[in-house]
Picture 1: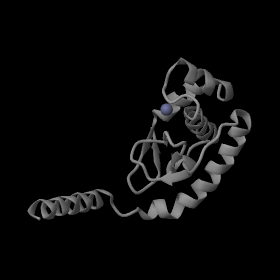
Picture 2: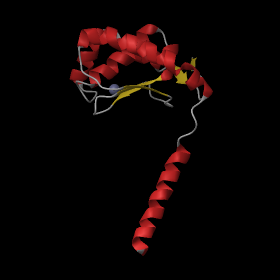
Picture 3: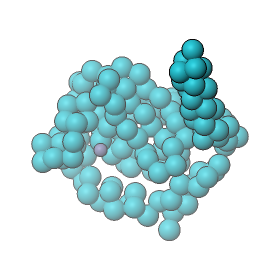
Picture 4: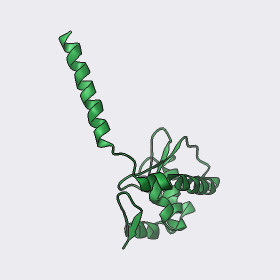
Length: 142
Ligand SMILES: [Zn+2]
């Protein structure tokens, strides 16, 4: 009895802790996530006409430092701030995540795959390093 009770209270604590960590969505994110979704889907179909990879869900998130990610379940995530970038950088990010559906690492084969659609991907990486994401706001380019 005592053990069960303890386990329950521990689980409750973990749940509460997790909830406290995730902050309420920012107004900026809520105001811009749907336009980001439209743009991401448009660029995904354009680039995937070339790659033709299978993916599942596409999520638009307010991430602090990532432009995108790809899960082992073939779900794609993109930062809503992607829409404030010039289109060649959006295409690089979208192509990058699409290629992770095929190569789940940053090995030589992965970059060869990215290069097929984005031959100047190294220049895109350099440009992206000059972009900072602002909390509760868009981007800062320096
Ligand atoms: Zn990557």
